[in-house]
Length: 530
Image (cartoon, rainbow, N blue to C red; front, side, top):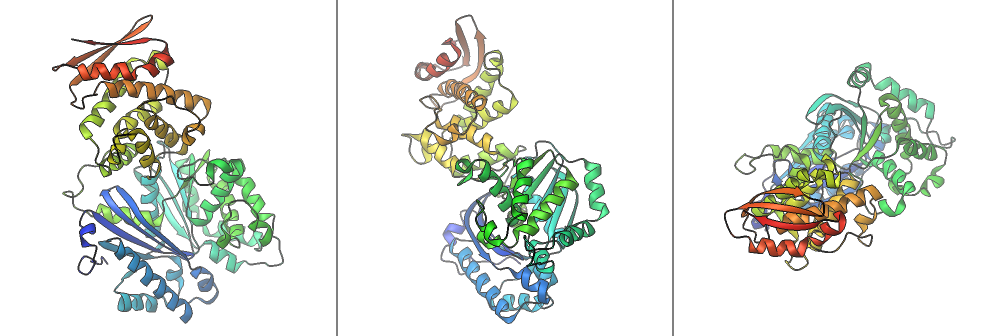
């Protein structure tokens, strides 16, 4: 049920500036609140996150019901999260409960209590619905690269498995294999990991049915995507072991986790006791007792799927709820979905910071035109071309903060925004090109650039040089250069521009911005007007 806060919210003016949605995921392990302001039907800005560890699945697995104490705590936590969502101007709230509520015999009483005391109507969703919402989040938050993937979301009470392509869900199902449930059912205090490994593995193979196994086999997926708490915890532990400096404070969304290293993490979890697991790098203290079950589930999934790569998704059920709610917004409020997830992400950010759209699109178009005509010089491919175009779209968003030093501000705003569809390397390349589009040479004292390998760093320097030429060709911000034709000679490169107006400012801009290109490609740059 949608709850209208505008009737009593003191922040009605804030809320009226956009569609602000609160999603409450009442999971078996934890309750998650995400409040997001929509900037399009598939774009949103997170303005509040809140999490409360609940461990409902443990109690329900043991007793099949919520105790009176747990019922009171549920009401208390939901009340606090409702107040928080109101405080930031949420216009709608969607509360969804999953496996623990599906299993608890007195869940209906708790749901009624929440509606009577707080006016919150909770939807206890079926497992398949949960899987479909998670799939919505995965397909919008991660770029599948044109491949067929398997998504795995492991919660406290259930495991959701999904098979599909970026634009199509092929098959999905929910299984009663949550880490809280497995740990409670097959707890074995006398054994090293704390659970009966054989029993857990038997339960996994007993529950995951032939229909899912056949769907995976028939679709031949190349990628396994991990989402939600325990699986993401294992993914982060793995990345931290590989490179602690890089991953200690970084988002791991769309990061690739080496499969052999992932298996090593699972083995490390299984080969130590509770105290030993607590000392493993990156472990979530509140999940220490749950990690053995999670490691067993992940190990079996790797065997079933046999992927070529494994990615992490920080989007899951709550983001799926938000996307579902935003999909119901009228076209008059959100018009025109961009076909590319990355273009859509960057455009949404640029709009948020009041970009000069005409100038930015002109620079992006000129940049890829020069790129296409100088392939023999730079030797870069389609992926780099896309990065250049996206950098052109958002290179000036820092002017929202200040025109002075806007190159630094642009990179800062991007770095602190969600970039759905970008892996860590693509993100660092984009940030580096934007950061140095105005002046200077990309260098290692800028952390995102320092994290690039030699090939990526060389590509960034070339892309930066190209973007500067394009930016110079709209120095006046009047989009007067209609097109550019490039001729490469032995010692120089000639830029023939079509324009119906004088281009004095563009000529001036080119004299100031051509140096990096000349240094990189060892060619003098000249502008020629017709």
